[in-house]
Length: 244
Length: 244
DNA sequence: TTATTTGATTTGTGATCACACTTGCATTGA
DNA sequence: TCAATGCAAGTGTGATCACAAATCAAATAA
Image (cartoon, rainbow over all chains, first blue to last red; front, side, top):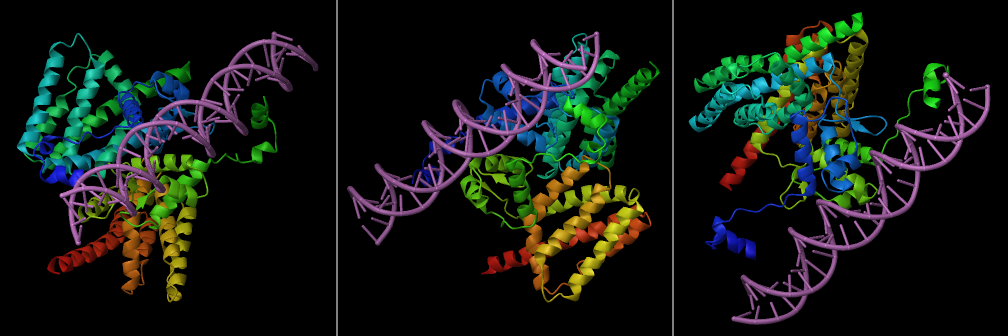
């Protein structure tokens, strides 16, 4: 039995990491996930299996299964016509998403605040520096990098909460609010907003002192900001559209 | 265009509900879901695509897509061998699930407590009567009916919370805790537990008076009970296994 | 000109097949 | 007798095909 041999006695095998097969479906799924969280798809945009398969240079099979998975986590929406689209933005849905995120991510950060070790804290602390860099050369607004960095910061914390149940739920929530957030970040950027990392500093400070309550409060403020910003924007547009 | 005609002017069509095509995959998915929530599969049991396809009298295609969806909501687990199984029960996972359920279902019932109308309250009130019936002829312990009724009661409340985001999450949580709960209910039944609806009466009373806090507290007690019961059972078994 | 119909194209769904990997069992060797 | 090797059955994955439903466009009728 090769396996047991490798595990027990082979000095070379001990240094080898398992290679792990990655299926095409997994790659398609990850790619679509990344695109959704990053807001690369617009709300209400319809997606076709064959179209995505062509774009991703694969057959329809992995795509349809990945789409099915994304539909079950409400990252995409199945229309009665059997076509699928990214869910449209409505005020009700935004409020709903924000409330859920405050509830669940707030709980996760409160748990993490008492569980993060100094190494993990150093990691998120170093991320603050990257925002300072970006702010220093803010003439070149790099929304993609901002989105990626923001995601890395938050999930570094959430991973430390130690809950295998909450983390997938948070991922699902980010998937659902991705298309909204992207719109909000662009709006921020246009509005000349620069210090997007203000609450992040508060969060790091609170976690460093294991102050769960302050960490939660700062997080709530952090994730509420783009939502309320976008909400005001949509309401203003609705009013203008109504009077026109 | 027939559709527009039907929508606008046809007085008969206005009374007709859309029939909605149901795909084979949807039926397979619903069936597996029902089986999982009901605890028909044992923890750690491995499932094969072809096996399920034969049992459900269909081809492998709808089954594999349904399995993929269930894996993304953590109702099933993908092993590195690419085989899938229902996740095993561990103490950590049970605590994790219970915490998440208290958090999210507690929020949902608190919202519902202030939003349910008299008709909805009457519905859950009438369900209490069914438990009384079951208790009256408790010699015939019908675990299936108990599980179904319990699910109907809770989700009648959750649906009233008005959150399209929280409800799917609760469904996912029930899917994940289904295999545990079934074990606990059997244990209850063996232990001669009869009044499984005690907290449900408190819940109905609290909702009728729009007391969100008491509703939440009663719900927490209700869903905690099988978990702590099962936890004690597992710990006792672990201790016995250790000493043996 | 406008509304309706008809036909062609596109799209999702399910079945089937080919391939690669895993698992279990029997055979072979020491 | 026991472990290792090799073979065979089983399983998941991805591609392709057939079919039905939906969509879109051109043609026709009012």
